[in-house]
Image 1 (cartoon, helix red, strand yellow):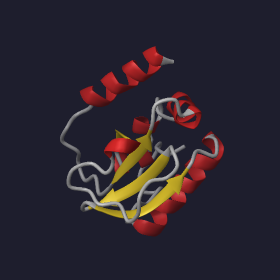
Image 2 (cartoon, helix red, strand yellow):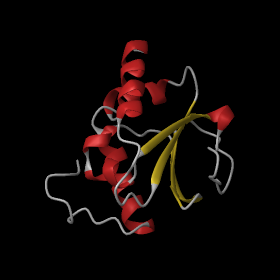
Image 3 (spheres, helix red, strand yellow):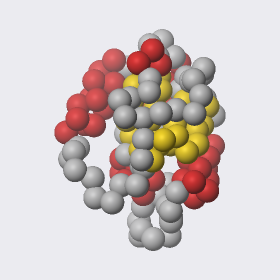
Image 4 (cartoon, one colour):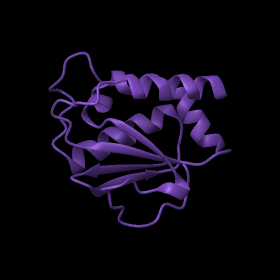
Amino acid sequence: MRILRVLLAAALVLLPTVRLAAAADLVMVEQPGCAYCEAWMRDVAPEYPLTAEGRFAPLLTVEKRDAPPKGMTFARPVVYTPTFVLVEDGQELARIEGYPGEDFFWGLLARMLEEHTDYDPDAEQGGGT
């Protein structure tokens, strides 16, 4: 599991730092020993940057004790991990608390993006889940 996390972290670092038209960020707040965080990293993280959702709202990961990242404000403290906070222009727009499994996560994420941003899942061919 640790090797997977290291590989994922390396892949995220190697992604281009300049994002084209990224309107929002998805901040994953995690903590060491969180079984649900590990499940998300295993089930979703490898494909996330390859999806339309991942390209629209690139992922940032932070530890619960360190959140929120510099320049970002969360509407309220993070209690549960993982918590996925949708941030635009430094302000929280919405969040998903917990990880309900891969199938439910994608639906919740799509709805959150559609309701709180100008994300259009039909605008990009071949993306999505």
